[in-house]
Length: 163
Image (cartoon, rainbow, N blue to C red; front, top):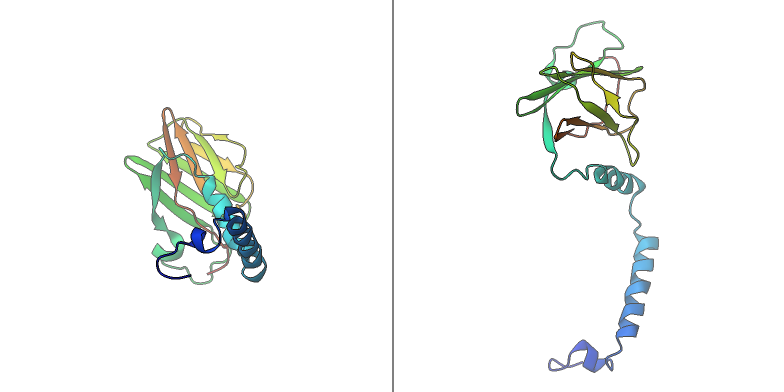
């Protein structure tokens, strides 16, 4: 093929052959350099954030990073605080599950996102408190629906271990 010829002219304009070649290259890449299972899982979990109009609640406190460890303490819960504007979500994660509170206290639907399927929606009580009866497995986030607003927390992976 010289500089004046296009790919189609050089190869007789055979789009079907180019499509076939592309398909063969995709199969070869899938065999020789497959997408890691963990990356595929993260992509599926990220899709759970399909609420594009949701406000992101950023992590403002994490007991693993911000708290002073207590000597001899074992099985310490992980404390997390998320903030989105005027709304704060405090969460305590233990081996039995998680508990949280939405501040200022208000009614909200809370979903624990930890993969392609969300947990059963939880409803906060009058004080904005909620509980989830099992610890999140792998990365998780919380989605809150307060009236007409949706708020989604940062994604975190919690590993509970003694300090």
